[in-house]
Image 1: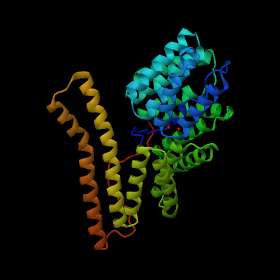
Image 2: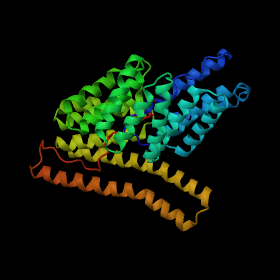
Image 3: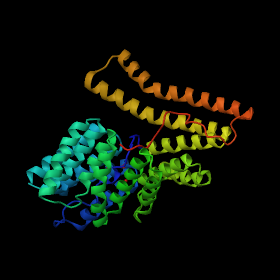
Image 4: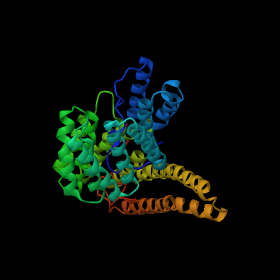
Length: 379
């Protein structure tokens, strides 16, 4: 299950067969295209396994261009897993290979990916500097998919709450993606626009862009984005009290999240289900889903906890006491969630039995798992 939490969509930044069309065995070309497809539609662990196999082939050791592309692939896969240090190392390696080949497009691809990772690491100033430099380079010497840079600049502005700036950059990116017929990038941009307009209380524009994101999903599928878009639309419809339209959206979003290992999206869907059941006065189902939400959060916290402790031990050989402190801190969120959810559901149940909450919207029972803009959330 993918543990990394995407608040906005930059998921389409997985490579889409971006390796240059130089002469190479047809079998290798087909395998590269397969890896790109896997990154779009399957859990990233599957793609990493194939990439490791490819990198072990003689063709990869003898072809720096092929290695450059595969390290770029690996960086995207590691990012989807939330392994940002590994993602950054892979993209730096890809950049070094591109630089050694004097490959302008390869350098740009790696720089964009590095900027995104800095944003994920909350290093937004560094991310913005990196991307503005790339933007100047691509304005002077355009490359394929020039809409990627304004999309990421929009996401950076979005992340720090500069919503008008985010709309400006997304607005520059969308017509370029539409002109390039890149349906996956169109999904990302429209989804992000939908979230920003929602935060600006423009529900009409928010619905229009979220529906547009779903409509742009390519025939080959884009499940990580589709799950988020359907959950976001369900949340909007709950605000508008369009209750009958909510369950089908959440059903599909939950199915896609489970099928494709999108753990953060699953947490959002379950949180929305609780809000829906509480709003219509169905406390029994709200309690049942709250238990599933706690289990999902436990699962994600365990993944992060094990990784955090392993990294700390490897770097600093932490003592047993330090390890226990790390474990306690990682568990705190889940414990707080469990207490909050059960207390809120119980209180609503008592209100309902007293006849005071039937069909009355109730505030969210958990800290808002908002898919607010922060899906390149992802494939």
